[in-house]
Amino acid sequence: MMACASLDCPVNNVVATRYGLQKPDGTPDTMGVDTLWAWTTRPDGTEVSLVNRLCGTKATYFSISPSYTLPEDMVCLLVQNDAGTFWKDTIWVTKEDYPHFEGVDCKASYFHTITGVKSTHRLIDTVIINKKTVDYDTSTAHFLLRLKARR
Amino acid sequence: MTHRQRTSCFVSRLAVSLLLLVLTAPSAYGQKIFRMEKDSIPFFRGISLSFDLVGPVMLMASDHGEYEGALRVNLHDQWFPVFELGIGRANHEEDEVTGLTYKTTAPYFRLGMDWNVMKNKHLPNRIFAGFRYAFTAFKADYINENLIDPVYQYKVLYDIKGVSCSQQWLELVFGIDAQIYGPIHLGWNIRYLRRLFYKDGDIGKAWYVPGFGINDKNNFVGNFNIIIDI
Image (cartoon, rainbow over all chains, first blue to last red; front, side, top):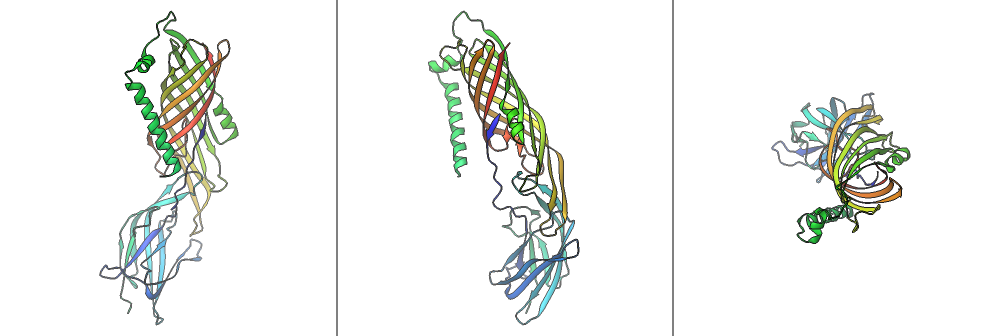
């Protein structure tokens, strides 16, 4: 039996968590004249940048790829205003991981279910889990970061 | 809608239209299909065994294929109830781009009927049109031994074995049999496969379905058979 068929990989094949920025009252926040960096520490101890210089009035969210199978991801945040004052915070996200397969032509990936989140609350007033399922859909924020007033 | 989706939609509509036409036609043609021709030829004309040659060649030349045989009953040279049994195998090892391995080996079966659409039914050469219902249940392995987390840069164990899947599908068949010598015939057929019901595993799509081929909503396949009348 011979056959002729095709299997297409999804165009949007990046698994990422989206962090929406909000003011303490729940209204949308932007970085404005402030600048945000995010980074994490790998299992081997080296650091890797996740977000570099997020700024501007259109900067209402950022996206970060979760680890494939680590039980807890740590994300360090640094926000600096135009006067040079900075705030640091750290977020820890716990999750369950599920291998995902589209086809042999498509990169293997992992989907996740978020089970918990916490932060040091130095920059972040509250962090809310808005969507637990992490897959190719990054149109909705998974976390809502209600940032403290910075001036 | 993509070109492929439009083609699929067109073929599906054509297939359903033809099936409805045959089943509902009150005309002479509709009656012809189901009416036994009045002649001295006995109703039961024997059985035949057939073996597909394309599947084994596909297995040798590519990473998937089938061994398949069929038992066909000849009723008055007009109707041919068919039972097909095969074993499908895929062993796609370490894709050169993604590094993924997909393995499965499982049996499948099909049940259906062929109609001899030749005007003179009792010639040794035949033209068939028919349909099949097919089913398979299989377990698949998904392995990537060199998967590296792109951000955290550590090796991930991606080794999922024995994921249970199943699928049912319909086939529309058109084919030709030609007598070569005595009870030996050669024949080819082309088939349009339409997936009906399926259960993919927990981790995503089954890449290859035994008897159906590379997994999709529909498929076109072709067979080349050696047929022996018993």
